[in-house]
Length: 366
Image (cartoon, rainbow, N blue to C red; front, side):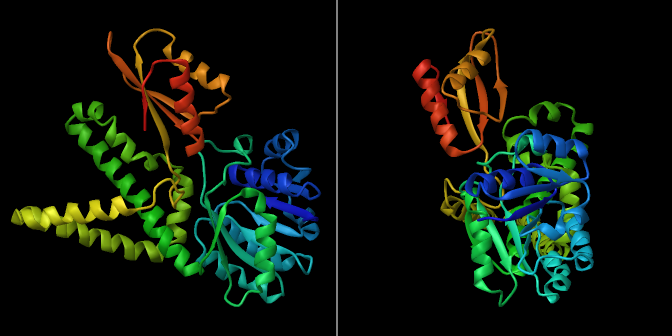
């Protein structure tokens, strides 16, 4: 593909999309738009963009592909401004927001002028943020959801997919309503439940201080998503309010049913509650990306002596395997401790396991 790509919001997602486009379409000219001049300078120095500006109006008329990589509410504001700009007739406009209905509604004014808007949502992320964390492999094998308007010309959808081919993502088309309902169930509701559980535990530890120390391990792992950016999740929750109202109501009803089972001491119902959950959970796809980014953790049994962490990471460095997080789960004098190492994808985790076992006698397990 040739032409000018304007990316609005040069963070992790915007920067990574720019890298993917550059890798697949080297003749494209990439312009970054961001409120931060330092971000633009960083993007330029890293070779992610060809030029940058803090003012969308300066460059929007040159865009063949216009990608909004900013929070949903900000994207809505930009879409409201677009009819006042002169755009190329064949420009393709898209976004990367986590909710789609309100964005698609806001885009109708742009579409009324004859321009193409196709909603987009790459379902990938990282614990890091900002343009310096951008990577071309961020979206590999992840789902990239597209929400074209009903009756949209398939040619434009195909063109957008071609622009984004370098992401190596799995594209899936949904209606905006179905998108918001599905992501509400599989991503937004779990984030709210995790946050509520953590908040409840925080209050609980005020009365039971020992619980704070015991909340490590499994509890900390099952509530990992509660550490997500609160600003981003405020934006997502408000923009998907209607779907979440229904989903939270269903969750409340389910918890009331669980409470009733306990009060009645209905062992049969309680067993069925856990059994049906187990059966469905065990049937879910394995080794695939989903609505919530997967955690690729490797657990390494290591002895407790100085330098063991640098030793293990040194093994990984020899094989040029990147990790994204490392922590000690358990260390006691004279017994084995556990290193939990987190990787970007399944491939890196498997390589790391082979690497560590090749250079040492340490046992690794998933």
